[in-house]
Image (cartoon, rainbow, N blue to C red; front, side):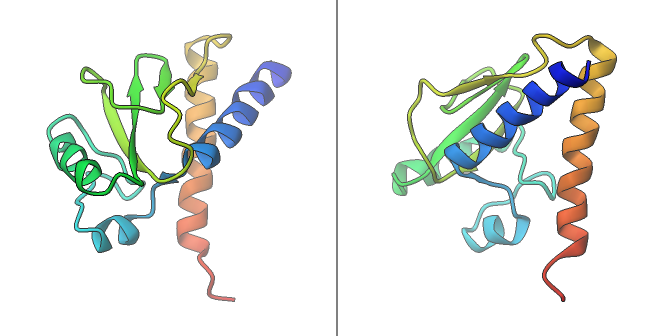
Length: 126
């Protein structure tokens, strides 16, 4: 499982920086966007604000979480959305947990979520 898990985490750690996910709540608020979560997630009820923002600001794109994948484009039926300002190639995507069972997928999600919370709590207050 460690090798499978490492592959999924490495894929995530490559895809998200390449796409330029904007996940910092304060940065999104500065852009006059209101995410549902502190990690920059937008649900389907708030995605219209992202669509309108990206039309006015073409240097940004939408990342869509749909089923077991994350797409570097707007997918209308997605479960969750993020704003991004990196590589706008709509053919980029990340398949999550394709080789993992339910329990392993939850562990990957927990590990990634914990890392983001740690980064938020730790900050740059050295």
